[in-house]
Length: 372
Image 1 (cartoon, rainbow, N blue to C red):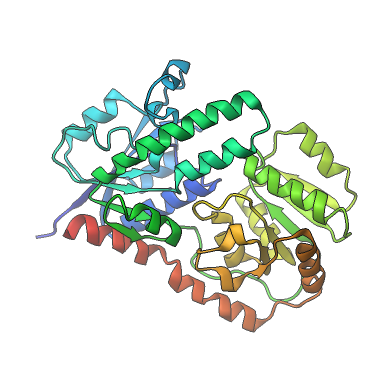
Image 2: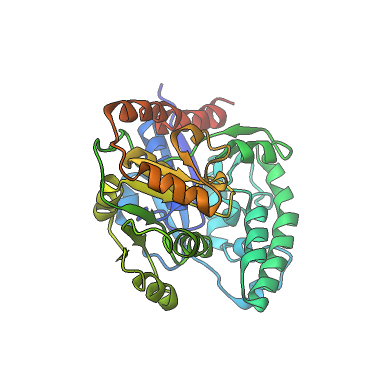
């Protein structure tokens, strides 16, 4: 007799379209779990994203909840990112169907240790959220926002202890596995992604590429570093691709004659930009979790230049060219701008596919939840 495997998955946002890292990890994990026979009951919070018909193709049920973005929720001991994702209807549904629950990200964890049910609960951290908020506290230039972020950081630090209620934790990186192992049994379950083959092209491209969501402060900081410290000193064409709303940043980009801005590219255009670039530039100044654009770039691009914060303990260090100080970035860009990406380079990349294999990682989750 076939035993059906049902799973509640609580996501802090609607994970389709897959236009940012967190959505990519959630969506392709759902796809992999379904392929291996798991029937997903998806619960997600609406926040600046519309409901998605595509999710119904992979889930048994999809439930949507309004995020409670009220200021009064900030005046609570529970972090705002968590407290604003509390819904009575969600609690009711979890109680009606006592399937195991997978909490995706600390944001979704309101009921992790409060729901009075008999089902087992599991936690998938997207990063060490306290570290991320501490980074935001240190880098935000607005004094008022910085104070609010610091308060949120302290709440998150206190709230994190609740993840010890989970039967197991599925960490996304080696660093996160080490961190969360003090809370509960912790497994490394690598990031899920859209790639099944290496799509990098042989030969040579004509430009460098920086891609990312430029509404996110850490990406803005990384791009400003490239503009001010690197491309103010070299004339190689640079394409900047991503979502942007900052008018000052847009003007700054357009002030450089060798830099082109491609705003809000769809997935096809973004794939083409990555594949046809000579260099994909991957600086970051925030080293929690794993940046999914690193995986996208390695599966689709030619030479990838990254700093320590982007690649350390990702298991992808050996596939990237490392640069940290501005002079190192300039040196590596100048060195590799005329190299031809070879068949041997592509062959070496193929080993990433066995390391970051969606079905293998999904099987780890299934083995823990349904055979424990």
